[in-house]
Length: 522
Image (cartoon, rainbow, N blue to C red; front, side):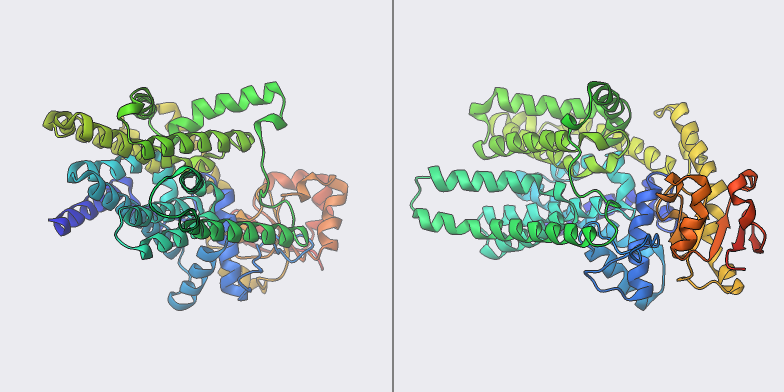
């Protein structure tokens, strides 16, 4: 019976993947939505692949004055993908597929946890599918950022922790901490539930009156401390590495709510509520989750103490994270992704509450039918949001009655922008090599306000308008030349009217679609 339900869940997960268009997206180039950050991740990976960088010394295509050396999250995925590329060849689909498999492993573990805990296959399937309806999870699962894999690893860790908590074996206890460590090294936000479990463990050591001695109970703390120490050590090293190389490329501090004035706080809060939250989770469904949490608090005497404390701590941790990184929530929706943990946690706690106090409602067929229909609608909406960011002109998106037409029009505009400024770079690399440009020959690629998008797409080291665009125009070209730029690459003819560029447009050596290449050394 368990194998059959395992198979059923995997089939349903694959069906949702088809609904989301993963079979097409798997082979797509980076889409506009956060293409800046996608290109950064791919750039680090490409430099591992092409330059055989040391694991602890990653770099990007934008070289600055430090050879491009900079670091973001723990690069285990970037490094692993680079090794796979060396074996299987360079295919971005390998990167996407690895991230998908990690997240799906997490969803499968969540299914297993729910089935073992609730002893009900329907609700066990419902919880991870309900969670997977999140637009932000649907989009970034089949992507290049580390947030979704960190979330998947955290779900795996939770499952192993539950197996240990249920008394099956100590090996699951230690294995859970290994996965918590990997998740935390990728994204610190994935440790919200880990910190909550740590607090509960400390509480039990101090206040528990069980048969075990205080020393025996305290000995359970060392795996937590190992995770915290190694995580701190990594972030300390990455800070040290960046301070001595390209600093400020990646955020490694906090951007708290108290660091801006009232007007800025109001503006960001408006964007968070109106733009980011609908892409985080369906608002009516989110309200339902919060209502479930409120009911657990109201009926606290009938709620599992462990679940109640865990929920309170996780909700507090999510709120604290939002306050600490409030300034990024004007656009950076992926910062919210790991906060999704409160949704399956609340569902597990609430369904456990129903099972113990209202078993007839827990098993009610009509309630399950309503829940099934609800999750189907949510998954459909998640599919529209995911496809819209890649293929906004698809009939599947255009004919949707559940997504605002203005939102679809907005994504069509951004899709056209990508095609205009970035499309040619996706296939230009062989042409550049024919012209004699080696990948380490430094170029100045304009217009491009991102760090690595055009540089990565053509696999060319050099500079973009990032930082350079802030230098006065009459000093800009000599600055990049002094840093070693050999070629000027322009993808918008409107720039030719800029007087500061005129002296550098005398030696054109090639044209590829809308891109023109100039030699700065002739």
